[in-house]
Length: 411
Ligand code: NIG
Ligand code: FE
Image (cartoon, rainbow, N blue to C red; front, side, top):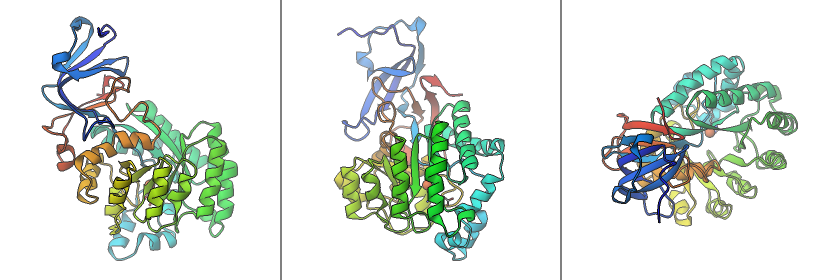
């Protein structure tokens, strides 16, 4: 079969590739390989020895010198747009107060809401830029950003507008998630039903009108929203044909993941208190389990998510930073790879699948991202490593050599 090389515009030579293809074992490794790109898409992958003839005068050739390529990393759960910080609450927790106690006493999410409301769009853009840059420097080419610190129509719109601007200014795909049901704002204190009505009748329609959300999320928890309140938000999301996600079973088992499965949710996230029934429903609903080792670590949680059960049932596991000011002020996807292994006992290969293939699925982007294969987006990270397990094994020396977004090297 002759291969059409005339469309190639970029060619990686002398690389080892962790394709992360689902059908392949482990990392889906192709050693001593080449990878060609045409107009931002991968057009050929194979061993160097089967590389067809090509016209090097019209192709940008990059000699990988034996380095490794992986898909660009995907951080599928973040809250990087926010004002202020909560270092004071960190100190309170170290003195013995729990995350729930602080939230119930008027701190927690609603304290970040005040700081976010009083920040201008430009101020939020500026602080979020620094966080996004930290992620990109570690190989991230796709990020999900949630709203949820505005909790009224103008401020939720402000947050999602910042997320949109970030995508325009950075070489990164941004998936925007509306998380109006993150906490009850103080003006609705004691009347969460009235706030949920506001989310459903005013905020979600306004945000949909502006095409500012790719998905809808709810914090289903005793310090968040009940099963039935979550259901009300999901019903409206369904009406607007927006996919749903859920913060579920983080501090207690509210059966949120089960509920989400009946709405074909993309993912349920956190999941420390997920039951066996919940695992089964997630499997039946073709959902991704997004595990967040940064929040587990930072809240000094001891209840582990049911990892072995998820694995046995074949529920895809994604890993994300959950970068936010309260439960995970951590903006390092490389640290998450390490923590997924040390704290959650994932294998380095499972951890890498968690920030590539399975993270793409958690965002509904599995047709174009998360795997290096012909036809997929050429979002590629090139690493100075000798074997892929090194990405999870070490932390603190950044092995990223070149990052490519849609076939273009990122400066
Ligand atoms: O994913 N759980 C709810 N939301 C965030 C925490 C937000 C915050 O504390 O500001 C989380 O952990
Ligand atoms: Fe979160």
